[in-house]
Amino acid sequence: MEKDKTNLFSAHLLNIIAFCLPVLMTLGMFLVIPQMSKNDSDSAADLSVTVEPPDISGNLLLVCFLVGLIIFVIGIIIYLKPERKKMKWAYIYLFLAISDLILAFFLFMLYVLASCGFGVVLFIPGILQIIAGFKFVKAIKMYED
Image 1 (spheres, one colour):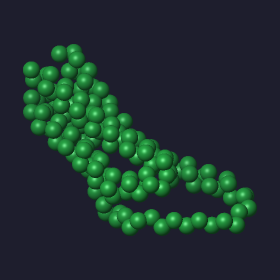
Image 2 (cartoon, helix red, strand yellow):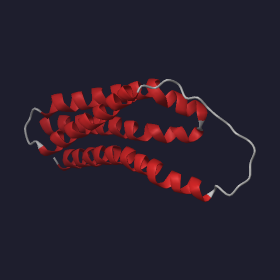
Image 3 (spheres, helix red, strand yellow):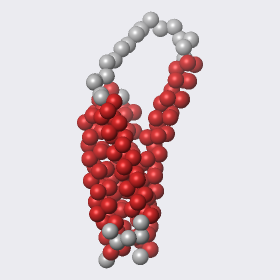
């Protein structure tokens, strides 16, 4: 009984971390990086490099974000609900987490990975959500047995 509570709590914690990481990365991208580029404006370089990103629709990125938000809310519901019907929610969570990672990979992560190695960081929230999904399923199966 104690082990299933530990798995459930660790899945809940991973769910929170997986939601907070993209928020922190986005804040860092809009707050920290522009400040860094302002400080480096004194360098004298005559080289100009332009890279045209692929046509990534803002609507598709919004869909990935909204699915991530829905996954987060489902994780909170699984953790807080004391009902025995958690198993279907755990499988929905896991399915959506895997689907969201695959969708995000084919929409924009493949381009980011090809253009910079730092893009691997974008996989971390999706992978954490998938691990949390497996932990939710495992904890609920232990609870029901």
